[in-house]
Image (cartoon, rainbow, N blue to C red; front, side, top):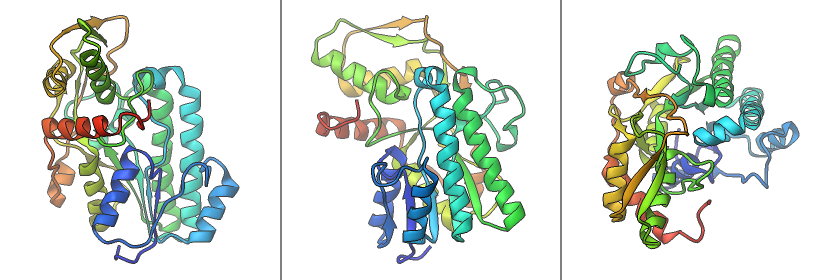
Amino acid sequence: MNKSSRILVTGHTGLVGSAVVRQLKEEGFSNVIERTHMECDLCDIKETDSLFNDNRPEYVINCAGRVGGINANNTKSAAYIYENIMMQTNIITFSHLYEVTKLLFLGSACIYPKICPQPIKEEYLMTAPLEETNKGYAVAKIAGITMCQMYNKQYGTNFISALPTNVYGEGDNFSLSDSHVLPALLRKFHEAKVNNSESVVVWGTGKARREFLYADDLADAILFLMNNYDSSDIINVGTGGDVSIRELIKIIKSIVGYKGKVVWDNSYPDGTIKRSIDTSKLDALGWKAKTSLEDGVIKMYKWYLKNINLIRR
């Protein structure tokens, strides 16, 4: 990509898309194409066609998608599979029809099997049953990856797929009902501090282990892959390490300054007990995450406090 390339970033108002747009503009890219959901419903084939026809993007970074935490994935699985399949099908199809030079499709490490060796290598995809609470979203994303691979095979396109681990950062979703674990916990502990609550109830047992990637690091990895990776094979993006939810809570409590107790609600599922991804493939290309979990949470919390009246809740 050069600085004047026409680059379409779908989902640019979301956590990852907004980080990608920030980085593109900081690096001097002058022709970034952004459209809100109100301006273009990517589930609508005609509106997506018009988006591509009117703007003729040379590169597409597909960050659009319906995402959420365990509860949202489990209770809204029909919406998750439908909307993700419709969006990605339209984006991939029109990227081919309008001869896009390169497309990056963003998946997620949560689409790997529920139980598989750790850390998770790319070749473990579809080798065992999926996590049931995440099945709708996972099937949709696997379909998108496969579609990219089949288009490359049949039409000679250059559509790549990256699978990041749990992403967090500025612009995250802080809803207590459908957000991911880190932003939900950050909000819970902040509100408990403000309200002088004696305790905070946390879902699950705290034993599950997760790997967390700062959104700006993922944006950096995405641009790196757009310039340095051209294989149909999926590639993991992560930090190479994980923490338990209990350890994560200690970090959040310290940063927020909450002094109360934690109460574990075991009626809610933990999800997959351990998920840490193998990043050796990306490491070999020369990319590494730069932001520690503590530093990332500090930055996220500062953003949360500054934007507390504007955030998605």
